[in-house]
Image (cartoon, rainbow, N blue to C red; front, side):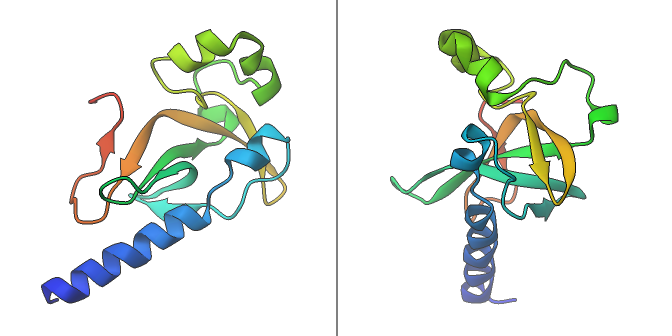
Length: 126
């Protein structure tokens, strides 16, 4: 694959990540958009940035029986907004979402997807 082809593939991948953007749907307790697959897991985008290189902030989706914490809702978590923003696993960690008729849990920490980087970075350096 040439460098130009690889860059195009990375851009297309970022398009899939951004197409899954669902932050406003999570906040309104609506089903999320179609997630994307990365490293054998499903992920959903909750934020984008276009300063410098384009990037997408994403959370992994987990089935409730595979989630070790206590699931919550957007409304419950944001009752204490300062604590929600200070969560070391990320603002959306532990939130229940609906996707294709299933209830799933957003599992942090979030990953930041940036075209051109082989390894995607956790926002918390893990």
